[in-house]
Image (cartoon, rainbow, N blue to C red):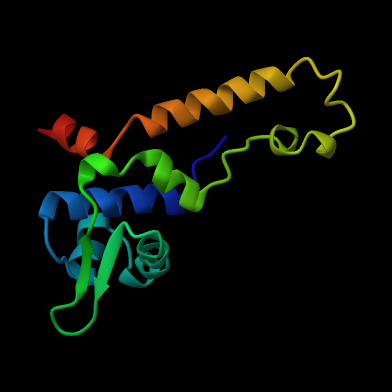
Length: 132
C-alpha cells in the first residue's frame, strides 16, 4: 500500500497553515514545502471544497485554515485524496467471485478499520503538539 503524493502534500500544507495561523501566500507555502505553488493549487482546491481551508486572491492572497486544528482528522484529509477500500470486495462483495469463501477478506476489512481508526483519531493539533 502506498500513500499518494497528493495526500502527503495535503497533510504538509495543512500543518503549515495550522502552524502559521492566518493567510499564508502560495509562494511561501511552496518554499516551506519544497513544492511548486502550481502543484499545490489543485490540492488546495480540493481542501477548500471540503471547507477545511479558504483561498484569497490578490497581492496579499494565499490560503488560510478555517477549521480548528483539533477538528481536522487525517481521516478527513485521506478521504479527499485516497480510496481507503484497499480491495474491491470490501465495498462491493459482488466484485469478486470468491467473496463468500475468501479466507482473507476479513483481514482486509480489519486492516481498513485499523487505518480508519488511527487516522480518525489523529488530528492536525495532535501533530502540532508532537512537534513542540
